Length: 291
Image (cartoon, rainbow, N blue to C red):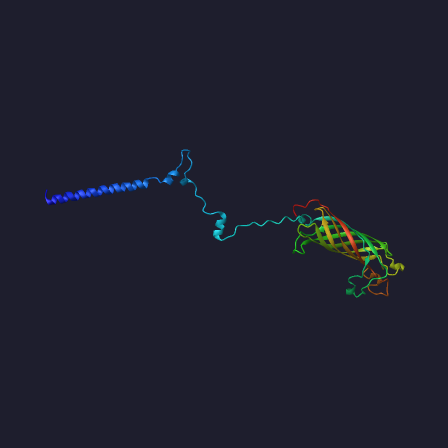
């Protein structure tokens, strides 16, 4: 075989050898890649059909608290709600009540407005004790509202009064009175302070025309009542009250000729105060739905 033929045969032989080696190494690589790993084998499903570890749902990466911390926000805290105010079932708009009050007023004082009308601020030698019994219809004009200290509602009061006079020349006094009461209503408190003012007119068996000094000048009179105290509610229907009440009776100088002391009979008036207690009863048992 000549030299050229030997070169061709040798080159062909080397080419076949190279192809054979490449095929063997490639098969090993593919076989190694396709061989299951020990961990994968352990995670395969068993014969009972349960899911393998590779097929299970992914675990959450962080808890809710960790997520909140990651986002830089504090955990949500719900504030406890305030308990419902039971006084809204006791003091509300258009509630009607009947009240009966009784007092013992033995303390004689000057008329508080004397300094404004030019009279001498003093009392007289003749002293009085009044025992008023007042029957009233109370109409609550609005619901509870207002600033914290003044929170409350108003009553419109229409009253008829019979007053006994155990000390003094006169013996009795009848009056018609109207006024306003402010209830100061704290949240969920059965004790409620109040202040009221009532004005009216009445009739007294005056003894001034019969010559009794310092007695009342005529039968027709006017009256002013001011009181303050506390009211205790047992529930929406019943409550009691206790406080102090001031009562003024006079004829507005009508008996002495409208301010002329030398004509007619002088108007001395009565100014007393003392304790008063009362009972309040709801007239309508349930609050109307429309309210």
